[in-house]
Image 1 (tube, rainbow, N blue to C red):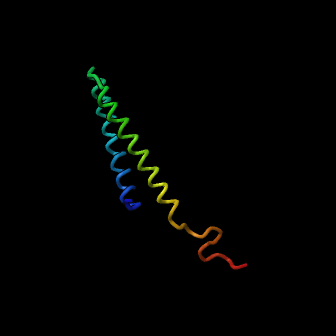
Image 2: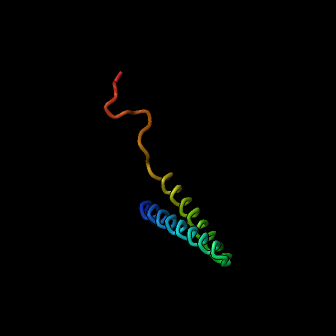
Image 3: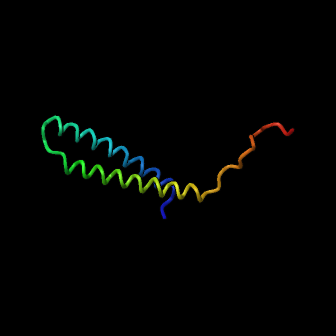
Length: 77
């Protein structure tokens, strides 16, 4: 299973690509060109991002977190 940082980087990269794809679709629509295949690609990319987010959440749940209820340098009374 990939590292948490690798998955986070992949999610960020895919989100940037999705943004570019959306802009490109808007340009095509303004020009009157069909966008069905581009929209299908966009939906597959979004599904992939959702899968990566689920993997990220599973990895985060498996890692030990900070101890709750304690404040660094807090009062001891």
